[in-house]
Amino acid sequence: MNVLVAYATRHGATAGIAERIAATLRQHGVDADAVPVEEVSTVDEYDAVVLGGAAYMAHWLKDADRFAKRHESALKQRPVWLFSSGPLGTDEVDEKGRDVREAARPREFAELSELLQPRGEEVFFGAYDPEEKPIGLAERFTRKMPLPAGDFRDWERIDAWARQIARDVASAE
Image (cartoon, rainbow, N blue to C red):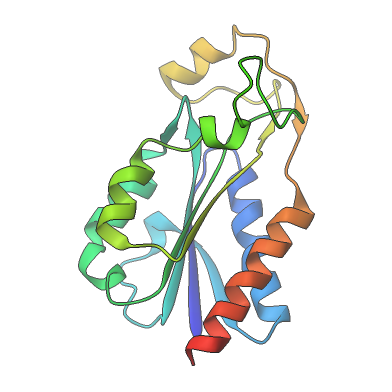
């Protein structure tokens, strides 16, 4: 099987996750390419797709959502997994007692789950460098908030999820 790991990123943290997923898939005998969504014109050469995007204020990047909708008919014909990155920090539960990953689940996932019937989805913690130039009005606004700086990506969790995808893909062959 050949898997496309397509992703939308702003500052590179989501790209790093996508590249790690593809590398882990390859380590487990699955051909995989990590490619930015804007560079993918067709998914026809792939047997499965992992689609990811950064999430800001509970919304997936528009490029990831547009990709899913543009390729909807092709994605419905193959196994699909969705992921997002975005929550910052190390707390698993927020001040209201909610699971941070559940609270950060992009709103677009509800519709995409109906449309694409993904085999799985995951929300990963992201990274934030306050020295990077903000992109867009929303980022300029959030820069005024006290956000924890650092790289909070959980590589073990990412690898475990990718290994599960590799097992799922292998069982489908």
